[in-house]
Length: 259
Length: 359
Image (cartoon, rainbow over all chains, first blue to last red; front, side, top):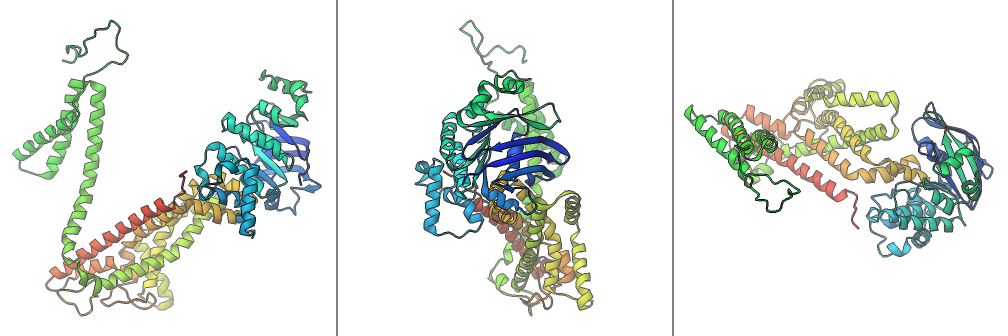
């Protein structure tokens, strides 16, 4: 059920400010695609435009095309809510719903959308999602406790479980490990490797080792100067990016000789 | 004296200690100095004829002065400044407490005499002198306030949701401005508004409970809007985004994520808004009036309410006046108790409904 994403001539705006310009890329299904680049170059903005979360911000808009398996996400007849049901997202800071238990957090996507489901099916869904997120063994005895009582790494995995419980086709991750310790990071990286059999994963990261470890394809974003839009400088297989990149800027960034 | 004081530490080791030790006042030294200043102030006041106001002024000035000088001599200037500011801040707090304590004391001591069963079970029908109660006024206050709450909470809450979740640009700014203006409306204006409004339909001289509820709503809505708005703003945006990212529509995000997260604060804000309007007198005087009998029907005829009841018992106490005045004080006491109970309820709400973080 993983799908291919084709982006063509995508410009992303905040009001009148053009944040990202002219992105052309195609993201392979059943793989991990990493986006790297300096802060403020538009990686997260680009990621958020892939499931129409970008337009939640007042004044934000997008020009260009994002096509998933032949369907244009920004077509006039497409409901952003449907898009987000197909394309899940995990955020930088773990954000479980504080009023809900661990169980309710996992089934939040089902419950909040008022889909009717039998109790036994819900139980199965919780178990499979938590197992998928590598959290089941740690929380199976306290599913009714509040999700905000977990540690940071566990909360982030809970958020991943919540995102995969709605069975999306694509999973977007916006620096999912930036607030986590190396052990939790490792757990989540292992998780990505497992999940890519089923999902198309796009991850934004500041950690180049992480990009090198988990991804098949890597995109490098950069901007020419303050106040100018970010661009996708290079998009290539990860090995190529990290050994023999096409662009000088990519090489400078990766080797730390930047700016 | 500070400069000539011998060093307290005998230093056997040649190198200087890492942390310099300083002379300090004993544990309650600061308080003792302040009290000494107070005693001097008391003596000074007694010399020129006793007066509490004079004593307070002398006490604060002399107490702070003695503490400052004493501390400066012993501990040095930085510590002395610290103690001086502590003295001034504590004195300001004590002075602020005076009217509150005095008010509560007066109301309780005057109102306690009639705080009996009769007061809670009888109305004023046929009562001229002794006896009588405020059953009708208590019920009236509860009914009218409940109706006002029923009107203002949905409107106020939805307005707050609009302002936080949907409002954009100029319209939002204008609305916020007018809500702020409404917060400052004098209560008598709200009463006159309700009177004028209902007089159009029912002719001049209209008096009924629902009119009072409408007048109170005019006062209550802006309070509910403002406080709910602040509470809703506190809900982290990340939770909304998490919900949107799961493909949950906005209205469901609001009802299932935002409101439950904010429920404790919303409960508190509503309770405090009720406490704010329950003691309003002027609008009820205009549109609800007063009656001696119990009237449960807010759509028909005058009703008694506690503040208006207290007002009439005090201004038209009858002969002999003492019984009426006693009833007025007790009505005031009951009102204070109700408001206090509401505040306690607000605290309980925020404690029990707050999102749990326990492991």
